[in-house]
Image (cartoon, rainbow, N blue to C red; front, side, top):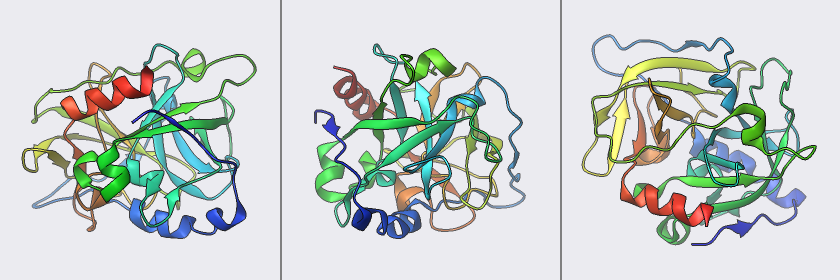
Amino acid sequence: MAPRPVPRARTARVTALAALLLAAGTACGGSDAPPNAEVAQPNPVRDRIGTLSIHSAQGPRACTASVVHSPRRNLLVTAAHCVQNRRIGLLDGLVFTPGYRNGYTPYGTWPVQSITVDPRWAQDDDPDYDVAFITVRPVDGREIEDAVGGNPIGTDQGVGLTVSVTGYPNESDEPITCSVRTRSQGSTQERFDCGGYTDGTSGSPWVTASGTVIGVIGGYQEGGESPGTSYSVAFDQRVADLYRRATT
């Protein structure tokens, strides 16, 4: 599906945010003794991760997103349920604030321009296609990747990889992070176990030691219904195809 321009924000759509936030709630944790997420200390790589919110950095939170490398240097990745579902449609008025912390916006706030989701998500909210790519408008003549850099997207990387997952719980003005190992959740989904990933952390990138994004919190149960486990669509050819549509 080609990228679709985001319509102008409307008050009626903003009031529907609460329903999307319920869908965006995720958790991380697991059997035995899973680790707990900690406050993420700022660094240049984590500053590529930020909040998706309505109208402004201080507006209602939707989810987490991160900058990924693209030819036009203006691309983010997040979960599709963060930005659209069949019941509500496309969420309007979104802005991205990378490196947000305690009200401070070190790189400014970037308005969303267009959103690309797979037709199978748009038509059926199919959890195997719960990934979205977002373009943001330039600010002061600069693209987002020029401001903070971008991580490459990796597909067909397999499971059992150690990843760092950083995201923004709605109740916190600081991001959290956890280093975990990925596990299989069937042929099309992956999971990890860690505590602390609550509402707002959907879309948080799964970043390998090499800096490659191989997942985002979402997918099965729209990221996880319990406080024990978080999920992602397996980044395979489906995601490679979606990335190509978003960048051509």
